[in-house]
Length: 78
Image (tube, rainbow, N blue to C red):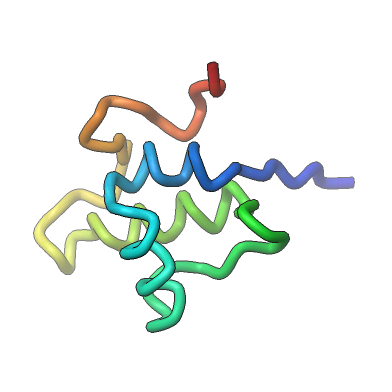
């Protein structure tokens, strides 16, 4: 069975350095995935959204995506 890892909104906002309000606007527009539970996102969906934002279509590589603050999806919250 696959274990689904969840990310809290605080971790998502560190990975996607925008305001909470902007994040929820993106969700309303369908640009970012909806949380599976209040303030909790599936890690794989967040990773996919970030990768798509930096895809080759947009001029990025779509690989090894790291937030502008240096955090990666594999780092544990402190």
